[in-house]
Image (cartoon, rainbow, N blue to C red; front, side, top):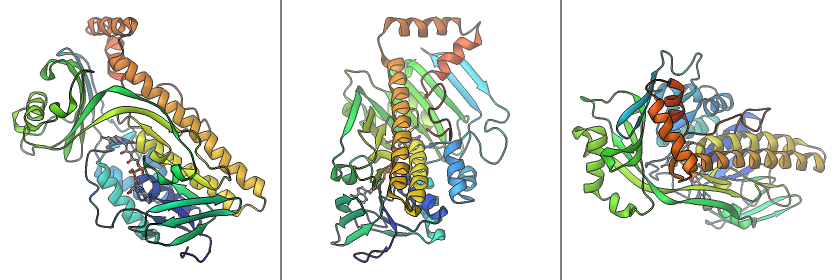
Length: 409
Ligand SMILES: Cc1cc2nc3c(=O)[nH]c(=O)nc-3n(C[C@H](O)[C@H](O)[C@H](O)COP(=O)(O)OP(=O)(O)OC[C@H]3O[C@@H](n4cnc5c(N)ncnc54)[C@H](O)[C@@H]3O)c2cc1C
């Protein structure tokens, strides 16, 4: 779409992983699409963000741009071992011969988001999809026939459909008058990304440690990704996270958990609170604006649902728009968009519920949960399922996904 002229490109706000996936998924369905992005082309997107990419996400990316999913698999790593400790004692460990399963796409891969985004950008380039940089959405006016958008560079756009993939502070969401609803944890989590020490690599395994004595009894999670490690520390409610992330404290934590060679290897350190929030509606009143990814929901990094569920949003938004775009009858077009919202709102509720369960499990003081964990830890030496339960319980979601037809959540 060229500005002010109306032709028929669908417009996407935001060139994060979700906006870029939406663009590829629309292009794959032969719908013209362009992206407007607030930041500049040479921006730095490094930092601790998604590393755990689910098989379903890889399959979606492979489907909408053949070769993209398998390229990410080549770049990423699949850890063969999962291990859990409880108060300094190992309670579970399992190593798989083929941890990724069979076929080209494994169950998951572990890769920094900045690398995933670089591959997405290359895919957009190959597909000839245009990104308009330094072009932030300012206002959105939707009506029965389409959407009018104003951007920060003074341009005006008309588009049949707008996808708001402009992240947690979404202007698109605010402009269509939709609020976030939900909750967040009282305590903080600390995340540090630590560079690999090439001549002294740690075993490639995911290690969860309940009440780790090395960090004064806080829970820790250590996850490998290509070129480094993610250390996740769960603060106590009365911790001061700003104090804990000071270099001297982080050095001590990293040294204790990972070994002396690693204590000056941490690159990014950040804190977050466990969010369980979603937009009240994922579409506007005229069924012309669709929200996807963090514009639609904020989920805890723990559980790795943010980008993964955002990619599922993207694919389903593109699928709905592709039908609506070609529909002869308005009611049919509106129905598709409503179906998108119904499915993705349900998926978000499922992910939020899973995050809530994980949070309650990790830090709740419900005596039944506390006793269950203690009992499982004391049985783990004799009864493997008890240790496996301790290993598995912090990650969600458990149970079947709510969207039976696609299995994507
Ligand atoms: C520490 C950490 C670890 C994580 N780990 C995982 C994980 O392992 N797995 C997982 O699935 N998820 C994980 N996540 C979540 C994941 O990083 C996010 O869910 C993901 O980045 C969301 O993508 P998005 O495209 O929706 O939003 P964003 O990445 O926020 O992208 C939004 C884009 O919109 C642009 N924008 C903003 N405003 C405007 C505007 N007005 N107009 C135009 N453009 C605009 C922004 O510049 C940005 O480019 C993690 C997050 C954190 C913080």
